Image 1: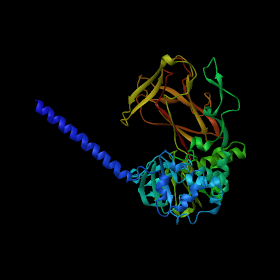
Image 2 (image 1 turned 45 degrees about the horizontal axis):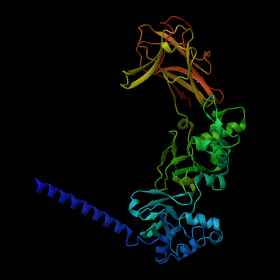
Image 3 (image 1 turned 90 degrees about the horizontal axis):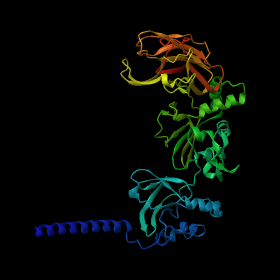
Image 4 (image 1 turned 180 degrees about the horizontal axis):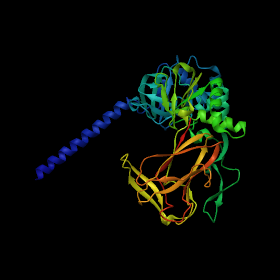
Length: 477
């Protein structure tokens, strides 16, 4: 027994020893014999980096590569720096930004970049690192590891690009009309993390902030679509020529009647551009003929219409001669789930039931709302909508009467509960299919719009139930 114990101890000791040797061998392979040398020392021993060293010496980063922190340096060769704009070398601020776009916190080896990495640089930008490439530059000498990081020698400079929002807001790369619309969406918002707290409200328990603090610039496009300032993510952004924008604007203005030309133009313009940003970077070779926007809109992309390409630090901008989306593809059906009402005419929670069912026609599960035995004539449920365009809609519902043998009536009331646009509709027994109620028109754009489901003008329990799986509003275009 003792002999077997000794055998197991010996095997375990050998396994640990071999494992440690393997780890140490890997360590030696990575360090490549330079583990005791700083990146600053290593760079001096690499041929063809003297120009980059010189730029570092005259910048605010003169001593950074000799520090104890860990860095990744993408160092352009002397040949790669020949075309560097002399105004950069003569301006310390610009030089710092240029150099910071070649240095990252932490160590990244080429073996780490088996898929594209978004590497955060010291200037706050991200560069794409994949295999032996960083952005468009090839890594000619890889993984020179020192005590405080790694150096990759590259054959091109890595441009210090603007992000997409900076391109939109500070350059003339974007056609004027679309640019003006996007900038018009700017507003001042409140950010509690940047505000000065002065106390706590004794009643609500909420923090109290010093007036005027925490006010930050915001933009509705950042809030609702994508924040194009975000350096970590990548986007593909489309802009269209002014004449194409004007044509699209005239197409969409009838759906945003407000009585004020400016607000109509702004609403129509936002509707055009909200589908012009896609997550991810698509090169021209990768661009499909159709992309799906955040809002489920199919965006047709004709590559022949691309007249300008602008690379950004967080993606790419394409300026097109035209990018046309028909209203029938832009305005989607609106589905109001019956159980998700926003209010009711009377508090009848004890008479309200949320039912889980299986639709016998589709075989799919659903949940609906039933208010029965409430004793109120003209009882109604309210469904609140926002930003409703001025157009005609067809209205449908699914209302399942499987709780009594008698039929009853209910109606939809668009706008106000007393609306008689739709007459009462009989709710048949056990009908689980969609029923067309009729059409109605919203004459002008509505920031807030209500649809009511109204019960019969009766207090009799069998006559005045309200039941709904969903209401569907389909644009009539």
